[in-house]
Image (cartoon, rainbow, N blue to C red; front, side, top):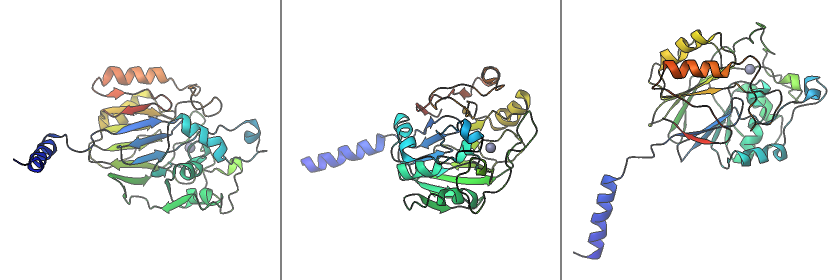
Length: 294
Ligand SMILES: [Zn+2]
């Protein structure tokens, strides 16, 4: 047998016995509601926010316009270099404020509808790539298929009010109180290795596609109560992995220091989920740490 033929047979055997595809989907938490999702070839980013407003912002005196110099070091700290696509759930500052700069610094396309596009275009920076999407229309990015679905933004408990519940103004110019709600979306993400549901809202009264969900990334801060949350999300979707989002403090504290939002009762909901759903892996996210979905 010639050496060439020998190598060809070995290559065929190796191909036959090698595991199919790249089986791991990984995520990283970026504080607040921010996270990345990657299959090793394609990296998606959702709601990346590192910027914490200060007292002058809350007083309406200072505009909120992050710079690459402020955001770059946080991307480095979270070990994020190149990414492919960025989505946000809505335009409140604690979800949208850093997305355009993260797009610019990581080379990603910022997927937007009209509200987010107004914020991104206000930078007047051609290095911020924007692609417009429509609700309920799937977007193919590598092996991922991301479908944005519009849904209501929950009112803020315990006050029962909606925070700045308007569209983004056409003349948006980075005023702190100009980061209106815009339009709220949840994301259903299909991948050959399993589906991911990403929802930042606190109300389970919605009907995502009736398909198995491997991982549920769910905002927990604004939940009605633990029981409604558990029956509405955990019992309903039976995810293999559950990752709570939007529970840490976006008023103060650096992104890599977790201080909980007042009244969040994180440990209580964690214990309730872990006790009642032992087959579901409850992941308590750590800033910048890469985790593999179960
Ligand atoms: Zn909001």
